[in-house]
Length: 113
Length: 216
Image (tube, rainbow over all chains, first blue to last red; front, side, top):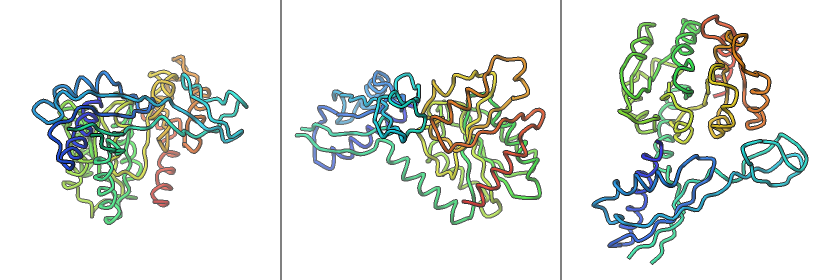
């Protein structure tokens, strides 16, 4: 459900950037979404379709690059993907780690005409 | 033509949250963003906290709910300033709503602001309000698997209060495994077992809270 406000914020950001570039239309929006945010691409698409109506982004294609949740073990300094959120280092079985990827939520680029 | 953007989608919210934080700091108010599932005990904890801190520290409360002002009325009965935010269907508070509520809060008269977020373990994790600390209440009947299902929430919080601990003998809940899991996700988190019904652990919670206010 937080996809509604996230999509609105994303659209505001895209329109602002497109207008700054003097664009007449937005063809594509490239988004980067970390797995840990729980943001679901289909929901963003669903909200985008009605929020963008009547704007220059109406009909733009959304492209999602999903970033897996990645941790760095502070014990052995190795990076690994957190699957099922087990939160145990597969190399040294350590439990002390920091998240290095997976919380992303940004607009990478837009294609305008 | 491709335009590089590389901008955080929630950047606008972050900027308003930063302004809220400055407003709170300039009034010397310490704010706590209280989050949990519906029914975990946010309002009960607020009432207990008010009771324990009456006469010691002046408290204000912002109540976030999808609809109704039941919680704000309950809190106002205790004689503390309370502002209700109705999100009108929205599943979380955001910095903008908080900013409006701060405008109706007598900031000069309070030292501690408790912000009760909408009951939800997903969305509030993404939206900063301008708070100094995040506190998560997780109650025994919800089950001990919640950290696995809502990792971001558990990963980001400053404290987890395990509420309804008086129900432990009646329910299948492995409190030790639960705490172990949370510590793995969030090394510095403070975990306190509490019961708003029996009062167990409330003293420890309040003293942790006062300590945090001192730290700022």
